[in-house]
Image 1 (cartoon, helix red, strand yellow):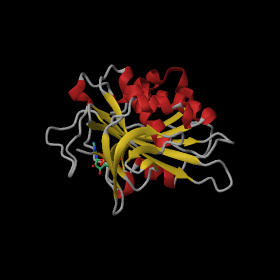
Image 2: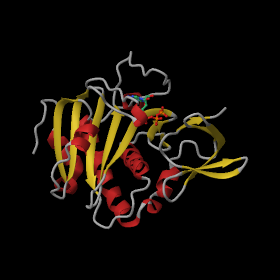
Image 3: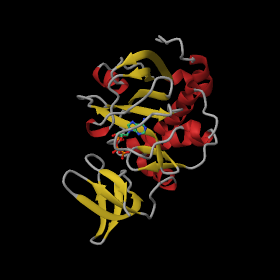
Image 4: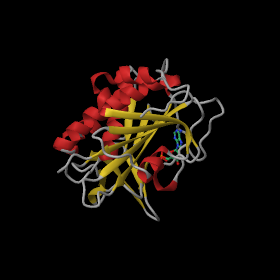
Length: 266
Ligand code: ATP
């Protein structure tokens, strides 16, 4: 089922997917409130494929904890993918980190230097945020659960683009010739496809090294801001379930993703 707005180049996307193209059902729309909400609220029937929804514009793009994801027409790639866990998969842990590795690998395959990951769900280029990820689980109600993985990537932001309260943002155009949006979508989906397969059979431990290798804050002082509390420490990577490991004066602490944000500490 493919209904594409005029600017969506499906063949370019399928070409980038190569032999994996048959594993996907891709739909593109001019506008929707949020591609994540659309797939969470109205999940397509399970036909064994990964369902993808791309929107030219989102009127209410979301980040974590009710934050908004900002995009400018023609300047961003915003899409969500609905992935159903194969029967018997372990409890999903670290899935947003896996999505981050997929985006990082897609950008690296386009020879973009300085790609890093910031726990739990941001992709940076030399310290500035280029992409955000929002993973939401759809409970299985007796069946295997599913996850909706929303990804927003800045391709070429307009000169006056500003994100309130956020200084360090960047786009692909600032790091070389940006790829076509549709070829980039294909690259990211191809990486997601392969990483999901590894994740489903071996879980996050099999991908932990790939995440650690790109950890923007490896061994650096950071602070973790939660609701009403801040913890300081040195970033010691991530655990086998994707929890952040923080070396603090009181010993090693595990920080679970959720209501916290990681920030560089002076
Ligand atoms: P951060 O640590 O970067 O504030 P977060 O991981 O705590 O992000 P997310 O839910 O991942 O929060 O992302 C939402 C945040 O991302 C927004 O609050 C805003 O600061 C920032 N943001 C929104 N749109 C963009 C964009 N197009 N490019 C870069 N950053 C953005």
